[in-house]
Length: 305
Image: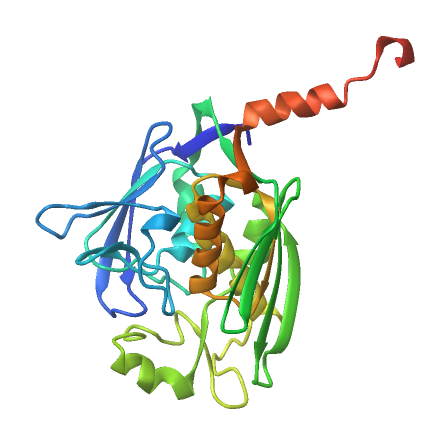
């Protein structure tokens, strides 16, 4: 994909927030070049506009929240992941509540919606954030690293003392088709033993077997079981893409994570942005021209066919 993209027409979707338990309506509206992704809280009197940017991330407990004070939107990671997965750079998202609807707990419902309304190219080149030097962050034994690579690659490891998960690791090289097939259907998950504590914190009020994988002390409780044998680590990659997409550009770099979550992902984004020597931003057309030039053969070695 060379050009920036937006959606072909507006669309609406309604659902509940997994943490707030509140019903919310989401409206997706096409935007012009260089507008980025913007949430608008239309239920608040002043209708605040909240940019989807890593430096605008607030709370990160069990979800990624954008904004501050009352002007916030929770649980943006699955929708942002879907937008990145289909290469949508510019979109206005009007929402009449504090949290993006969880849908089925993955990003595939948003993928279906975006494909149904269509995606169109805009008349300006995309920009890529190209990692030039490694960046590492660590927090309480959890860590994430990004290092140079020609495309976006993700290598993630999770560790849970549960017989259905244990240690899971997966490497994923990003492209749109692979994202849709291998990552978008992976659902969020949680443990029944944690539900009471989460609800006391004001979280998981809307969680159910319809929008999350639930586990007791021994097994998965959902009647249909898992969509993938390693669905848990696939969802971690889905979240990682959603969180790192808040850097604001397509990414060329290899991300490695160990037991990471939304906090560690945001710490990595902030450290990248705080160290401009570790990256550069180039247009896709510049990269394409450079690639063509590097593969151009001298005339004296060309063989007629």
